[in-house]
Length: 141
Image (cartoon, rainbow, N blue to C red; front, side, top):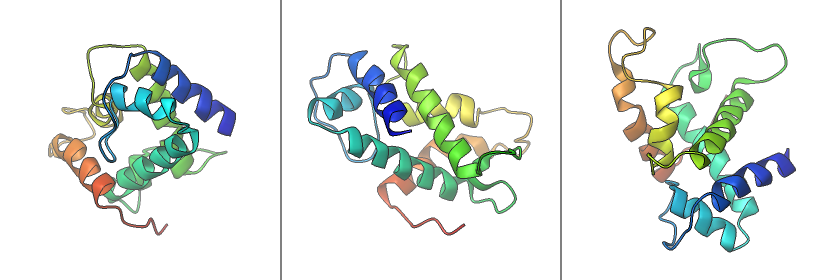
């Protein structure tokens, strides 16, 4: 798993030219690249963990932790969330339109106007996730 994470994040990092130092907690393409330039493989894993924690709290659901809507036979909701983050990082590296990873992830993780969101709460997902990244709380599953 560690090799896959490092390779995935290396792809994100090599996809863009970086000049800015990272801001705390919210990852952008420049920040991802900057992180790789300073021996940040472990910190990128920590970012994935922090983002998964933030998603858990933003989703705030006992019946669907991490907002994972289906039950998996061979993985936990947390691992499914982390897999989605890693997959999102791969897609993020291959595009150039979006520069904010949390917003980019929201386009597939909890799209605005989704049929399973009749009250429109998905519109708050990005700001809620960013709030919990910057104000971390432990996950108690």
